[in-house]
Image (cartoon, rainbow, N blue to C red; front, side, top):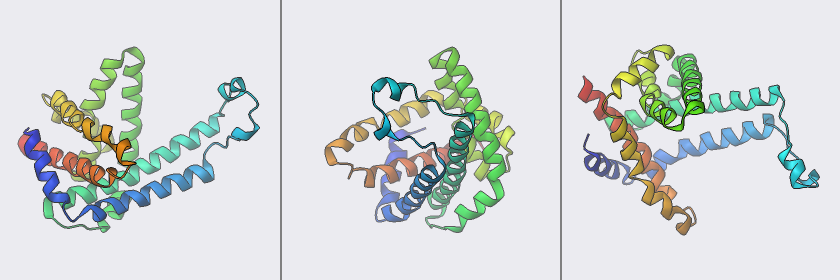
Amino acid sequence: MNRSEIKNLAKEKIKGKKWDILWPLLVISFISSALSTLFGPKIDLTAMESLEELQNIHFSFGQYGISSLITIIISVITAGYTKYLLNYVRTGKFNTDEIINTIKAKWLDLLIADVLVTIIVAALSMLFVIPGIIAGLALAMTTFLIIDKDVKGHESIKESAELMKGHKWDYFVFHLSFIGWYLLVPFTLGILLIWLVPYVNVATAIYYDKLISKKN
């Protein structure tokens, strides 16, 4: 995989299209904030009289369950956005129907895959950090495969691992290559994110598209 080629292509594709790429993310961010505010754990920091009290906060099982459910909902919605971007990468057109249609058709498979990936990565990370990272890289394409192919949630685990064989290190370095831009974000008061977020997201979609084409 030619990282420079992918990144240059991504830069070309985001020219004049940043708002089309960003606005669905802003909507997703709003939904996430709203759900967290309405249903997330409520912590009154003003009532905390000491650091020890803050450290001893306990969440109930129900609160953990609600937080996890919110995370899964946002993950499924984000998958619709991923389809929206992948469609743009391939056709040069933005189709908001892709977001809704993907969520409606694939929500259960996305939910299953998300839960399985979380369990696998968490279990391996509890043993050693490195195996957890490797598992995360191996399963990085589960969402792409579900939204792009006729792949079920549980099947996406195996399919992603197969797809990423020989590409895990390359994919790691690919994302690591953006770190310099992220380090500059604080110095621009976050303004750089208006360019960086579309750049990274489109580049990732192009990476998948080229990887799947190569495997086929």
